[in-house]
Image 1 (spheres, rainbow, N blue to C red):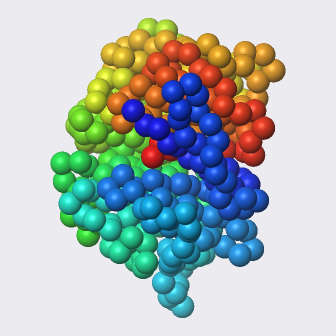
Image 2: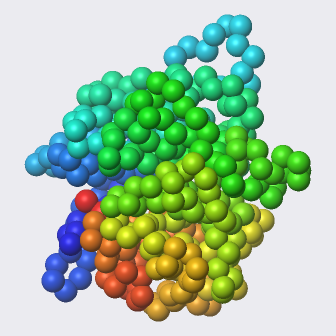
Length: 363
């Protein structure tokens, strides 16, 4: 069971540890600076923190195993934009939106997704990065568009545990994409999704879908879950096709985050919100919904969560599941953090006074 966790916020990175009685705050890092993403690398014990420093740009830091100090490392950067390019997107990293470790057979390999929608790869633990040109240059990128941000971005990176050269990435708004050769070539993987915000004749276009978050079950890697802009979708064939989840009991169609049980692809968690025009919990009461049967039924768990005058929103990376599937950590835009030790049935508050939370992760 995990005994250490991280909470990335608008004003720093907070480190927690677990005793027999409770979770306690341990150390603070980058206090006052926005930390857009945190990645504990379970392959070697390193920790990576992405900072979003506005005028000073995006920055990336690494803490090596056994060290208390952070080292600033290279930041993903686009090559110069060709003078004759008609691309309306500025080739400049505004924010590191996602980080993922390569497979266990690829020591040192890291992936980073950015705003705008670039995918970058490092082979040396972040000391250098290169843009994955093959994805950046797909013709369909001309259809990509911003959702909550004015530019498209890559927020989900799902490495296949069976083959480290195979991964699926999620783009808002640009669909889901698969590579089986380490990024040398890509194919769309959003068949079956539906974009209700588009004209009816374009709603099924794969390259305009807005998968808010895509996650993969580690033990059953063909099983993927997606919280979409207007629904929940599931794939059981590694993204070749997606089926909309319409359970017997209704669940909210809108939300940002999803998490999947690492050993059971039928079990997944979501945090419903009202529609994009009203980004608050339904009826101002926070709930975590869980399915254990592949989406046929959902249970809304509310124990320990605020049920009145609650306006907390959970971002895409604001819900984490431990390696054994029992511990859940959740943080909100209102600076509340909770932990559940029974797979989401009951929640205990960790803090109600943190800065807005962007990402949480177990070590």
